[in-house]
Amino acid sequence: MKRAMGIEIERKFLVIGDDWRKLGTPLRLAQGYLGDSSERVVRVRTAGEQGFITVKGLNTGITRLEYEYSIPLQDANEMLERLCLKPLIVKTRWTLRHAGSLWQVDEYHEPRNDLVLAEIELATVDEAFELPAWIGEEVSGNPAYYNHTMVTGLASQSRGILKRG
Image (tube, rainbow, N blue to C red):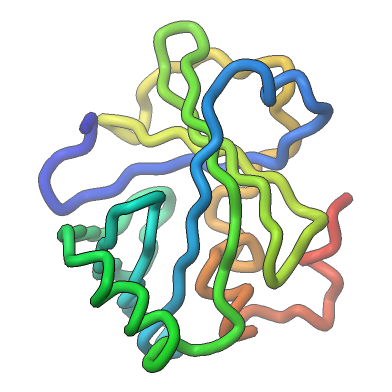
C-alpha cells in the first residue's frame, strides 16, 4: 500500500479502448453504502471471497481520509443485501502495472454499464507518473464519477455529467 495510514491520494480517469484488458486479471466487486451523506461515506464491499468495510471522509482536492477493514464475507453479503442503499455498485476490477505504477481499471455493470474508469493511488499529491495510452479525460474531484454519487444521486446528474463522453 503506497498511501500514508488513513490518507487516500487518488487520481481518476476515463478509459478509452480495450488494450488494458489484456494487462491484468479481473476480479468481481459488489459494493454498497450505509448512508447518503456527502461529508462521509461508509462502504461495504465484497471482492472475490473477501469482505471489507471502509470509512471515507470528504475530498480535499485529490486527498481524503480513508480507513478500510476486513470483515467476514458472510457479514458483508448480508449488509449488502439488507442494509445498504440500492442500487448496489457491481463492477469488474483489473489491477495492472504501467511504467512502475499500479493502476486499477473498473468496468461498471450496475447501476451503469457504459462506464470504465481507471485510478491510481499516489504517495504524494505531486507524485509523477506516466499515463498509459488507454487513459482518457481526467475526472479526479468530479463527484459525478464517485461510486457513492452513482448510488445516492448527490451530484447534479441532470447536467448530463454521468454520460460517457
